[in-house]
Image 1 (cartoon, rainbow, N blue to C red):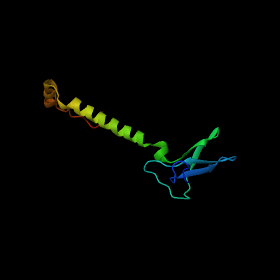
Image 2: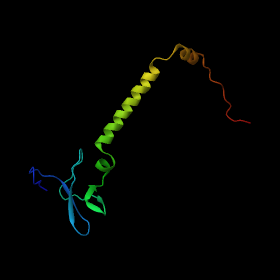
Image 3: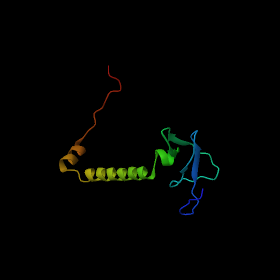
Image 4: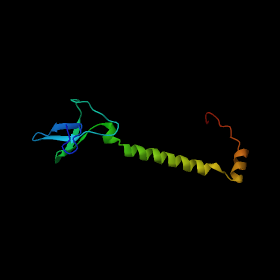
Length: 108
């Protein structure tokens, strides 16, 4: 559909709730639709005008969540590296003196 304010063509998902026809913006980062493509739209029965295109990317996983997840993993990795970078002298000695005990395969 053509946007009335900007004049740009915007992909819209058109659905019918039994009483009225609704159209929602179907654009999302890294998600494209072709004209006439069928998509699943979900909405609350109390407010059908607030529908959403039901797809993994854009509904369940958004770019903000993906970015936050990557940043959290990077931060946790940096914390782990900094914690283990400079071990104390006592822990180095303990690691060098460690001898693993032989364990029996079966306990009788």
